[in-house]
Length: 74
Image (tube, rainbow, N blue to C red; front, side, top):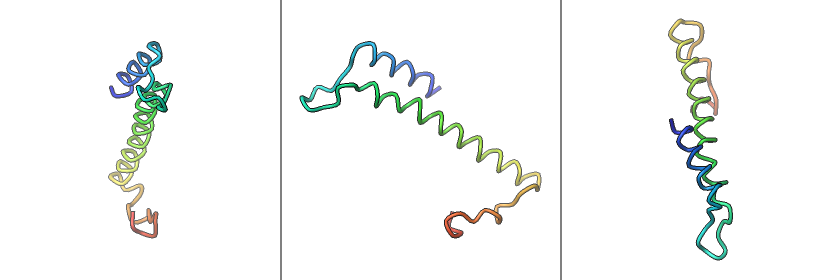
């Protein structure tokens, strides 16, 4: 939902030619607003990865002990 609504939000800014009100501000604000759907896509990818790992742990195919990223801190 965030990606879908964020995409329309970015397109509206692009079609209006929205820019910053500051004289030295960002002239193309749609670039920043485009990060909303972009980041939500990567959030979904990370969520799928974490969910599949949790499912593998539940069916005893893997264990959390095997994952020692960041020196065991993660």
